[in-house]
Length: 218
Image (cartoon, rainbow, N blue to C red):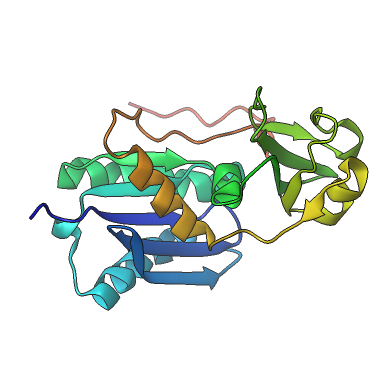
């Protein structure tokens, strides 16, 4: 009997540290810890906790699923770097999944998924249309064009306000973020996937230092 795929998924793209383990079609362990900072120190420990709950080790994994954003710059880099390192060390694939597609996962029809981008902006992706939109950075005043009579389902940040503008229905995500990332990664595990890379839709808020860096003596 073939071995069931065992996929560890994790995400630190927002103020949380989340991980889930998918065995075949079932989530066998899942943990979400809200945290504003410290994800870099906690992530691998959290992944270890998830594996311990399921009674497996890193060597049992067949793939890694990782959230690539959009979201917090530092958080995204933490997860993507960890996924690449684990994949390289274990000799298994790492599969990147955006937070927006994870929010929409499992919801039928036209879906508008949105994530807070701060500064009166949001990250938005529309799926389920004949011409799906790529993720974009926008505001309530310049949302992507939604087909008439689409009756979209709106999930995520300011979903109620988006629904009011496009005659949509507000809905919660069908599953926790890390669980959805694991399921999406499983659906892609049988094909060649590019290495996970951060999904950045806006420049970093931090500006480079104005002063020249000190010279490094030989």
